[in-house]
Length: 355
Image (spheres, rainbow, N blue to C red):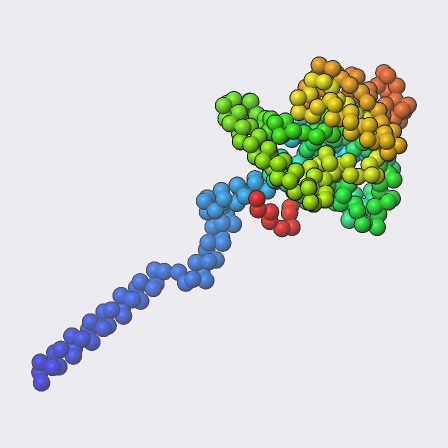
């Protein structure tokens, strides 16, 4: 009997000790809800380095996918030039073209579609829509009385096609297109071969200043194989399917558009190894057959999208006189120069784009 009492007392002491240890352990922990609030506070204060780095990298990728639409409005200007850059074009290069317009009292908007994120011609549509919403708003109206486009290479042409097609079916389509008085083509449009496409994209994605030649040549070889097979597949599909080429290539899409701007200026040259001279001239002949006002200026000894760099004064003169026929050869515009107000608008995407 005495032995049983001793065992019961020891059992009670052991149970009490376990409960006390459990209370001590729980006092040193944080409730799940409190833990979540603490984690949020750490992130808010920037203490969660790993998550912060991840978010910064994600924001950087979004900025690369959706680069800013840069606007520069000149006080008193009623003319707007929208510039679409070539593949791999950096904004500081495109800004040089915008600067001489602004110096002549013409407002500008410039944008370059990131070729590294383009997989199909339809990928240009959300980018062009963002440019449209930034410049013209949801109702397709702004202060500009006359609108001109200045597009570079096939990357610029594809952006323009997406922009132009995006107007289809809108109630302001007719009125806005009437305000578009002309378009300037620099080194385009052309039916680019598989080899030319591979050369252009490999050069844009792996520039010589940052990557060695063996890497660029290897990428070029892979792209050439891919584009060659792709062209063969599209050719086979075109036997029984209509509109294959115009749905997949910007050059053929532009050929299918019958209401391109009435006035067209072509700046090109025989030194272009990406967009051939003969292909550009054939496109211009098609536009002439549609009773468009076509002006051709062949600039010798300049490479692809390098015409202004080689022939700066002549290039600027052709562009400014195309927009304003009264612009004199000394570089004086009819209107007095006004101060320019520049801005860079970077809109956040409404949906996440994963490529």
